[in-house]
Length: 357
Ligand SMILES: [Zn+2]
Image (cartoon, protein in one colour):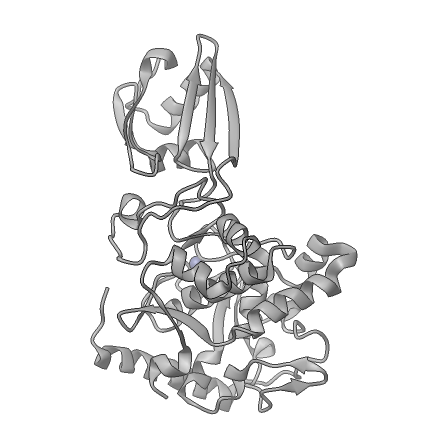
């Protein structure tokens, strides 16, 4: 996962050159006049119209607090714009505005402020990893708004839908969380981390290696207190379950779930790593995908007629648990403590310090 610093400089150079080209040839749109999210509707337009020039004022403009990143005048200025693929178009957005949309899309705005701050830093770190070319989005663009690939993203319309009459109040909370941590990212041994996160660990997070087959020292299983009781149930008739398994895994040839479902191995955190389904042995992740389950920590209750699955937690379980982060914040932890709990041995640094500007 490590990259020689020379390569990193070349990659950063490419990013800077791309941003400079857009500065020269792009068509700057008017600056924000509202709550700083005017750019969001631009997602539906083309790249030219959506381009926003970096701000020159690092404090306020029309009453809007702007990202200090956008005004640093340093090498990191080129990293203040991120190319976001929305499923139809690629749009250049100020990094901190994108992080506001991600934070709003990923967690309830009613979360504790310190949990929102932790989410913002994790999302920013995840994003920067893509921006410097150390992580890839399936779309071929820098990053996308599909939570199944990169990160969720709420545009202004989605925020209004989510928050209704509380729109102003919740937007202010999200903005405070993002802008008070602007430019902060996580590193391990001086390298940006892959800041994976998920909805709910159900009491214990998972080793990265158990899910993604890559061992990372900062993505190891840790306790995640305050979310132990979160479960999701799914019940099938025995016939329905048999058909679904056989459709997903033709070599299963399942006939009787009572005899044909056998958990062979669980990880230390309790998630299924291997399961026999009739004549085939699959990973917990394959089972989760096939049945669209909330997690791989599944308990079975099988009778002659029904198959009841109870999923503990939600998501892949690696890195920060959003619900666990909120529980930590409610117990009095600040965002740095939350991040250092879920990402073992990491440092909180500024993007400026990281790229040595
Ligand atoms: Zn993506």
